Length: 256
Length: 256
View (cartoon, rainbow over the protein chains, first blue to last red):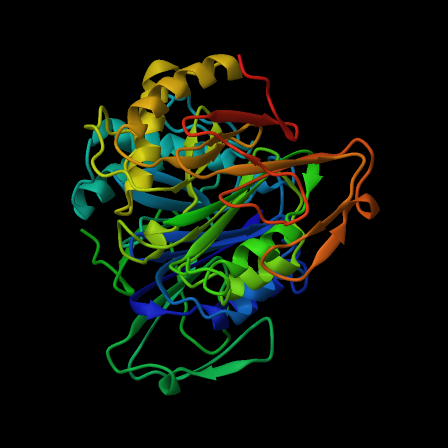
């Protein structure tokens, strides 16, 4: 299994604090040491750092930890290999372009057998069930919509597709196009929304605290999504099995 | 305009020496300071480091300079913006998936007006002529071949498409799927093949030398392709306008 980390904000924000705790789970405070990756959207652009080394030892993780890249949508993943060998091609997040936008995807869980592939536009490069599921989702969306539909329409379509894939196993995932971040819980996914009045946060995986009131303005809003809570003094919401949340501007959109 | 750097080898090799000279042209020894990027294939996987900062100052370039990633196919680019603003979305190389493989592309030149787009499968995310041309090429290849054809067939198809695009302006480019590296010259592209007996090489852009005989075995073969020669004591071959070379295992395939 693996662990997921996501961030969705209303203003470009760096993820250094959360990443500091998360990366330690890649071989130090937990056993997810079979590669890791993190993707940052900056406007429509996206940069993706991948390494097959564990995130607690990787020189690339050291860079990400010290280089405050400001982004409104981030997806990160630390891997404990179950399906597919340890290699760069099997390292999440995966990136594809659809409708003139980049899409990032990372998965935690196992999908035992996937339904047959409807097309060949999106094909996996590696051998993970996760990349297959991502391609399956994009193929299905591309066949339904020739251009990006409104978020509500897209969410409705995603819900149907995700319900279908969820029959094949555990399907916790994060998916983003740089504006919206979709978070689906099968077994384990938590989130916290940080907004004014900002307080102090203390990491679970390292004895480090930050006083967010000293590094934010009153209108900032940041949602952090993680497999397991990253801090031990904030109110993390445990998502329900089958729940798909749509984060925009640092908070989940109301359910419809 | 911009500058290109590529490497194609018969054994995974690090590009630290060549990159050390190349990155200095991004704002230090030359004026290509509007972003840079480098993509490394490792097996079928690909990792792409991008930064909108200049390569002589970027913390990401500092990482790449010091982290010897071993790869058989590398493409790098330093940008002097002409068409499209300075942003991550406009930073080369560009990455897409076709036929279950990643494809990397970087361009040096200006294409004034591109022919109309035949499809919508590959769409540019940014606003450069370069990404448009890349999408145009992939769209045309995908419409001609449902799976990857043999290299000879693919090369013949590429030659026709590249000749068409070259009518619209200057089109020096590097393109790779992780096995083969295609290099096309419109105005400026040079390459050198390093193989036994290996000698000493000295950078143009920095007073650094390396004795390749001390870091190689007798069967290693490495082709380095660059807009302008990176060393001042090796025999660089100047490609001819209109020439498309196909590099495999560290040397150009014979013309057919």
